[in-house]
Image (cartoon, rainbow, N blue to C red; front, side, top):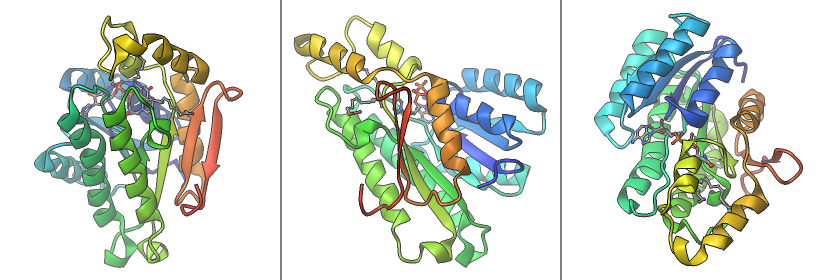
Length: 265
Ligand SMILES: NC(=O)c1ccc[n+]([C@@H]2O[C@H](COP(=O)([O-])OP(=O)(O)OC[C@H]3O[C@@H](n4cnc5c(N)ncnc54)[C@H](O)[C@@H]3O)[C@@H](O)[C@H]2O)c1
Ligand SMILES: CCCCC/C=C\C=C\[C@H](O)C/C=C\C/C=C\CCCC(=O)O
């Protein structure tokens, strides 16, 4: 899709990858509604984005993606403000293996709820203008990772959900493209909180510490810019329906494995 003039909602946009995606979209002429549960960081981000790109180009809405009412309010406010939404980025997520219910509620149900509201708004067969839904999963949604099974489950399910919608035979009639962005480790607070703490919230960390650290070293850590570049490439691609894009640092810089056909990953 063309980014200039597009209207975008980014969940989990107060910091980290979501904030970086918002900046890249604004730089290219989009208008962005940043949604996040963290109001303090959200308001700071809103102020910085408005200062840099204009007060009419970006705004923040406090939204807990696990709450149906919050998500509906987010859509109501975004449409009131910007008239329509062309791109929905379900990016909000957590990684903490001690929070099983929360992980599923945020990473999976939050993204599914956001996707369905976007789909209802965008689908052409019900009067919408079409659009794109990008769900932010992880390479942990494609391969097993022994130290974070709950996180992996939430991301595998999100990949399956997204690819299933992308493969619907009525997809062309709906006019809504579905894609998944799957970064490996990325340099945000999600990773640093886990890496820097004495007891990361991972499964059997103390017993397998060396193996966990070795895995991170082998795969490498993407910069936020690496992931943002892949994100922009994915958004801009016209035929992005069913795409699964991985971003892995140590496979020769950031490698974008672009898998288009949803039936042959
Ligand atoms: N950092 C990584 O290594 C990495 C790798 C692959 C995928 N991801 C995924 O990328 C996405 C962004 O992660 P990040 O690294 O930027 O992490 P982050 O912790 O920096 O940012 C996550 C954002 O989500 C928000 N959030 C959390 N729960 C929420 C809720 N219930 N409702 C609304 N917002 C909520 C947080 O407040 C925060 O602003 C996540 O889905 C994550 O799983 C991260
Ligand atoms: C103490 C370090 C681990 C903390 C991890 C915190 C958050 C990570 C979230 C990412 O979404 C995980 C990304 C990649 C998963 C790791 C390995 C995947 C192996 C498959 C592969 O990429 O080849």
